[in-house]
Image 1 (cartoon, rainbow, N blue to C red):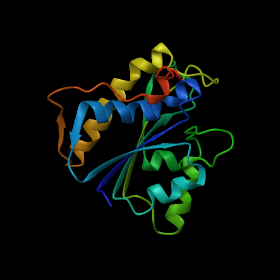
Image 2 (spheres, rainbow, N blue to C red):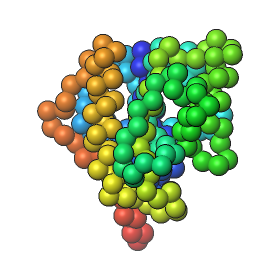
Image 3 (cartoon, rainbow, N blue to C red):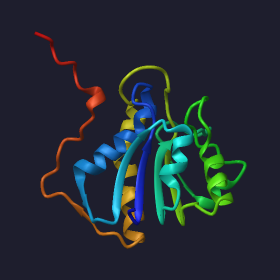
Image 4 (tube, rainbow, N blue to C red):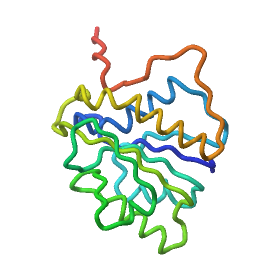
Length: 178
């Protein structure tokens, strides 16, 4: 088990909901991490999120969040903020929320030691591929926040000498069939 798990949450087929996976791909393309750090594009895990978070020392989640604020705005929430009844990190209407997952893990003594949610306010969560301009602009800002948190946690992070293009496989044009 890694010291820090970075999890991108979201459905890549639902517009700005691809924010979490997009940030994970950007981090993989831009940085090298030590063995204490793992990155996971978890998609839309529902109750499977419990097993991802259980027993981790620290978790950084990246997802869209409900808020009345302007699309593309980053929202940072720590573990105690996420447990507040006022916190509403958004997965989708058919999945259990992050708050319920955290409370369940606390009840069983398996909650992560430290949690940070790097969220963005979405513009559109309608079916379709591609981030809105405001949310696309927030991807690099979110990656910077993740790197800042990793450094705070004492994890070595190094910018790649040669930046790789992010593997946004869901945005790739279809391969023609012969």
